[in-house]
Image (cartoon, rainbow, N blue to C red; front, top):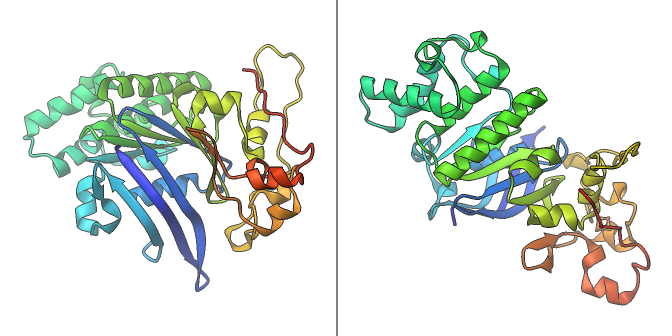
Length: 337
Ligand code: SF4
C-alpha cells in the first residue's frame, strides 16, 4: 500500500474556537491506482489534500495517522516533511496562473525542486527540465524553458505545473481540480496526459474534482465526500452502476445520460451545512428525501455493501431494515451511462 490514511480529522481555529472541518477520514491508495475524491464545494476535498501535504495554517489541529510508504508522516517535523513534499509526494493546484511565479521563467520554476531534492549539476538539471517538458507534451522545449508563464496558454501552464510536480518522480501525485480552469478540449488532453503518466510511472494519484466526467475518465476507485466526511467508497464502475448513498445519487442525477434526448437534469436542494452548524445525525439529513427519525439523531457509520463498496447511510443498516421503518423509502439505483 502506498498511502494509508486513518481517522484523519482537521480542526481550524475560528473566533477563538476550534471548528472541525474534516471528521475521521480513512482511505488508502495503492501503487499505480487513481483515487477520485468527489463532492460539492465545501465538502472538504481540498482540505483533505492540503492536510495530506500539511500545507495548513499554524493553528490548525490535525489528528489521526497518515502513512506514506511505511512512514508515518503525521509525526514528521516541518524540516523532515520538506524532504517528502515535492519528492515522494507532489501536488498540482487548480489554477496554474496563480500557482506559478510570474517573475520567473518556467525553466527556473521546474528546476527548483530538482535543486532542493537532488544533487544534479547545472547541465544535468537543464537536461532533466527539457526532458520533463517533452514528457508533458510541450514542443519547442529549448525555447519554452526561458518563457514566462504569461507567454503561455492555460493548457501549457497546466502542463508546466505537471512537469514541476513530476520533476522528482513522486510516488504519490495529488491533483486538486487540475482541469477546472481549462476549456473542454484542453481538459481532455490533460486527462489523457495524466492517464499516460500513470501507466508509465505506476505512481498513485489522488484526483480531487467535483466533475463526475473526470472521475469516469481517470479513476479506478472513488470516494464521495459530504460535509467533511466520507459517505461512499466504491470502484468507479460499481459507483456509476450501483450508487447507494442518496448524495451520490443526487450527484449522478445532475449529469446528462447518454442517448436520452430532452432529459431534465436533477439537482440537490439546499446547500452543504457550515462546519459551525453541523447536524448531530446524518449530515445530509436536511437535503435527503429518504430521511427518517433515526437519521436526525444518530450519525450513520460506514456499512459494507460488498467487499469493495461502503456507504454511510441508515437505509442499508440491517437492524433498520429488519425493523421495517424504511418501507418503500430505498432510492432507485439503476443508472445507465
Ligand atoms: Fe438520507 Fe438518512 Fe441516509 Fe442520511 S442516513 S443519507 S438522511 S437516508
